[in-house]
Length: 331
Length: 302
View 1: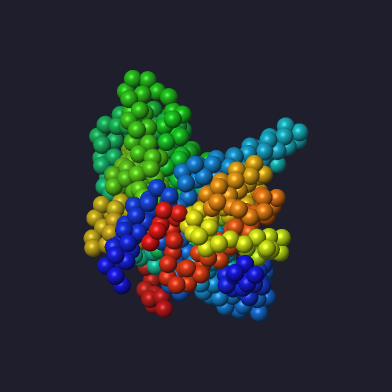
View 2: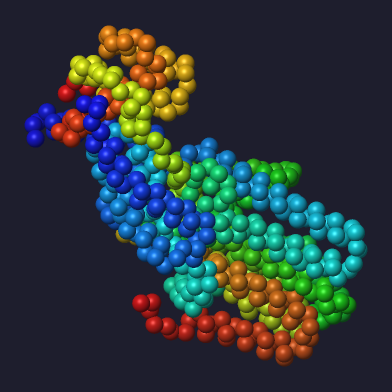
């Protein structure tokens, strides 16, 4: 019996060249991506992959060589992830994100966006009323570090100065906008991630943010600077607040899916909501980048109130049209 | 099929199901209908991968900060410092939030740390791993890693201390979440529908029953001698020969000789003997398999 070649050994000898070929092609693809392969090689992979899969099935039923089945399993798994995995180029993915995925995801979250927006508005109004009645409330809404001297103790003149301050060097602005962008984006990502804890922390973050805005508005309104202050806020605020409202909406959608999954299983609902919310969030980071630029440059360089309102409204209209303009459903 | 055969199958199936969770093997059926049998990444492997990634990430951030500081100290030029400050802010932001995303969104689906541990991220439903899923699983790190760290490093007194403690406990729930589900998925995996599996790259090794056959030619065994062992022992034998440790081989060879009552030439080297026995045993078990009988181990008398 030992003189005869084992069936499994003969099986291996006949197919080994194909496996090694697939192995080499996959190694090349893993190193350089699909772009690193020639056309013929690209077409060859699925065929070789299916051959390897059938070899695996056969090997499991006729061969007792552990290392052989282990090798084929690892080879097939690598092949599987290449054949059925993500292969599109970065450029295509980015383009599709801006043309279709992001606006579609934002549209799908319109309910959560409305809730998040109403929550912000409600807390702005509440904080505004409270601070107008009793300026001491200001300190409960605003972190002194962020206030930077703009509190009820400040004189009207100094408050007016903060609205129209012209920095000495233009270079100082890029630093400011980078800081504002990273700071806000970190908060937005945080609001999104906190949504998982049944929406509540995200709601709290929305209320805090709205409260701070309302308190500032009340402070400036008490000194008769309402029109000017709102223009100062509106330049970047229309973009920034929109982005924060969207990040809240993204957080809510996850929390809601986890709490009330409906007919799907909780895990499926969470995954579906999480992916959609993640698309929104990737866009929110972009929006906050734009807001950082507006805040750092446009607000400090443009000191005419009307121009500030104009820029702010143009941005807001732009975002609204971009997100909610009716589109054909994806094919 | 006989009733006995059926019971055996059911028993085997239940045994398999009962054994599955502790080893972490999961069924993973491709559209072609083949089960690839993936293994869920172990806690230790994933933790080490995370540590490696943090080491790389924060190491390079620290190095970058040193360079920025060095340039500032050397030149003291206002505009340069300003520009470097901007670059530093943006680089640390991108590093903290997109290091994992950029690596995992590539076809390999693994950060350097994961690759070193033989892990990769896959979509739990077996589909393509999309960028939005990768973004979701990594944005969740915000509450799984950075929030607990923030609580850990914040200090306060009185009411503040109590609040911080409560916060740490609350955020701790997110950290230990993977300990309480079967697939060891963390919160981010759940929000993205992903999981982390082990996909080691294996090399095709020589067939022990083939190459060394000439060396062990002439060593023959009787069917009774080959009936002493089953598939499990065959696999152990394969491991012993492949590792090639002299001591272990000598011990195994002497045990097999005793068990099968070896009366052939005594001067055969252990390795040759083991190889010959392996080839013969595999031949016999494989031919039994072709007739529909898998002999599980030496106790399996069918």
